[in-house]
Image 1 (cartoon, rainbow, N blue to C red):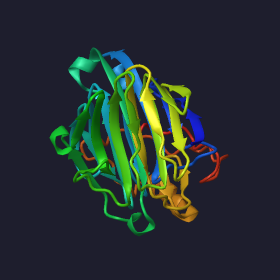
Image 2: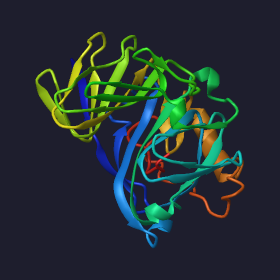
Image 3: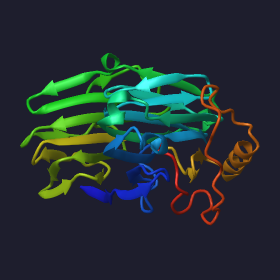
Image 4: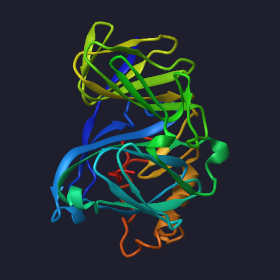
Length: 306
């Protein structure tokens, strides 16, 4: 029924913003094409704390970053000149391809006045045929993301195809990603037709096959088994998975099917060949120089939220 249970580990982004890191994990590098998952917050901070919480410009290659908020708002700026505020229920989908830099800053007056911030960030690895694509960015509004409701169930499809729902979020390989809220006693299944599937419990408690699981746990399910997840108390879960892409190497913010491509990305960032956001180019995160962990093994050095 369950291949693995991954407990989120505390991780610091190095700027006072602590998150729960779910993927990658030493026993499970990827789930379908998903290679990274962080749960940030809920956190309250003041205007004085905000500058230290900002995620300064940093680079990516070979992946799409997916930002999804429960509370608060974040301002995204990138090398393409995009400046986009993301709010709860929206999706920011940035495809790095051959290389992009972006920042995330906390500039919302409500958040700065002590409002809550909570978000989930994932990285979706790109198929080899798309790893060197031209970078792109899309923001999808809530009305573009289909919602399903039933007794005790509320679901928003963030990306992909699941439960007969689909949307226009651009993806590059078969996957599903959904935000689900269950009321106590409500049973719910997983999408069928995908070889790798998981459920991250963001809030509350659920039961699967007589065992209970709580917030901060990613349940990775056995192939070919169709489990039933039942909420014990009000629960928020993120369903994700899809077709595996094959081996990927990850170092800092770089993902690739080739180790040498990651080495090139390191050199490109140090040499300034990956452009900074034109409207946020005064500071940036330098390349980490802890090279004790080669690309593709162990835990990558501390990394930005996305």
